[in-house]
Amino acid sequence: MPVSVREVSISSEPDSAYFLRVHWKGRGLGSGFMMLLTDGQDAWRGEVSEAAVCEEAEELEMPAERYIQDLQQALTETESSSSSYSFSLTPSPPARSSSSSVTLAYEKVQKDISFQLGSVVLMALSEPAEAVREILVHSLQRGTSLQQHNHKLEEENQRLRREQQRISAEMKRYAGGKEALEAELYSRFVLVLNEKKAKIRSLQETVTHLQGSSSEGKKKEDSVKSKRTAAQEEEDEYGGSTDEEQEEEQPASASASASSTRAVQRQLV
Image (cartoon, rainbow, N blue to C red; front, side, top):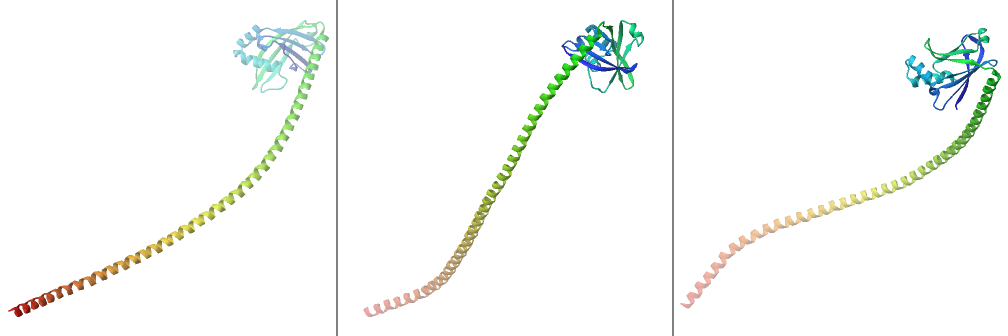
């Protein structure tokens, strides 16, 4: 069964120290809880039922979950929260010494407004020393448990610290390897780039040479074509003069043939 012990301050007795022990079932304070209050000399015990918790929530017109959360903070939390809680105990001394019961009320104070969360009637115990012993035993057990938990946390922190150091060393090693790899890749890249540049220059020179050769060939071809054209023109020019001479020679030949024919005919006569 979960148990909590906390120190509470009674508003009407600022110089007195009270310790409140609360234990409840596994479902939380909503299922009801037992309370034990002591100042080291006297002790009182009481119980709050599940029905009483629901009734208080309905009277305050609060959702049950919100009301139980406030109860948890007021009765079990050892650290202050955004809201503060106050406690009152009646009757006050010296009337309390002759009373067999007291009423413990707990209020919530928020933005200068206070309202009562609930109250419980606590019956005086005939053997308060036993109640004090229970609180001391629980406190010692809780302290031992916290000490063991702290020891485990310290071991875990040491393990995490060693792991962090190992990871840091690995990161440094990886960073060094990365830098070396980058330097090597850069060197290889420079070599490949220089080879590519040399190849490009060689190809450019080849293209330039081919373009020069092509230009010279074209010039030679144009020259040959020019010569051929000139020769053709010259041949055409000479060919025209011979035809004219042939035309002049043909009548002369014809005339000579006619004269020879006439001479033969005269001799026959």
